[in-house]
Image 1: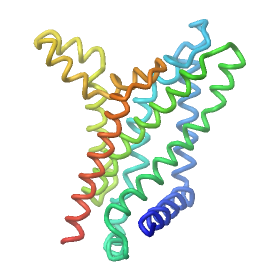
Image 2 (image 1 turned 90 degrees about the horizontal axis):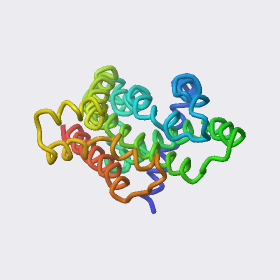
Image 3 (image 1 turned 120 degrees about the vertical axis):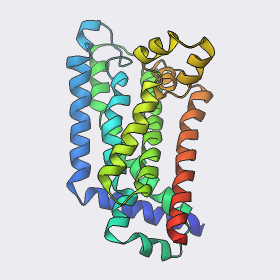
Image 4 (image 1 turned 90 degrees about the vertical axis):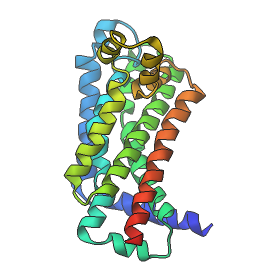
Length: 248
C-alpha cells in the first residue's frame, strides 16, 4: 500500500510540474491543431465521402508522436540530473521502480488528456454521418498504447543523459526506426533483396503494423502485448540506468 502511495505522490508531482510550465499547454495546442488540420485538410476527410476516422485521423498519430512524445518525455530524468535533484530523489524512502512508474504514469496520463481533448473530431464525424464508434474507441486505445511505447523509450533515453536535446534526438531515432520497419516504401525495398521470412520479421517490430489492427477495430492481444512489451522493456532499461546512478 505504501508503494502505491509513493507512486501516487510522484505522479501528482510530475503532473503538477507539467502544468506549472507552458510546455503542457504548448504540446496540447500543437497536437490538437495538427490533428484537426491533417484530418480535415490533408487527410482528405471530406473527399472520402464516408464517416470514418480510420485513415484521415489515426493514420497520422505515429508521425505526430514521433516529435511530440519525445518532447514530453525528454525532461523526466535529464532535468533531474541537470539541476542535481536526482540524487535527492534517490535518497528519499522510495524505490527506483516507484519513481520510474510514477514519472511514466504522470506523462502517460498527460498524453491521455491530450487524446481526450480531440473529442471535437469525433463529435464532428458523428454529426456528419453514422460512424462505427466502436472502431473509433479501439483506435483511441491503440493510439494511447502507442504513445505509451514512445514515452517509455523517451524515459529510457532521458535517463541516459543530462541533456534534454540529446534525449530528444535519441528517442526520435529509436521511434523512427519502429515506424520505418512497417513503412510501405521500406518494406518494398527489403522485399527486393530479402525473403518473406525476413520481411515478416522486420515488420513485426513496427508500430504501424501493430497499430493497423486497432484502426480497423480489432483488439488483438498480440498487438496489445507488443506495445506493453516495449513499455516494460524500456522501463526495465530505465531502472538499470537509474540504479547505476544510485550506485555511483
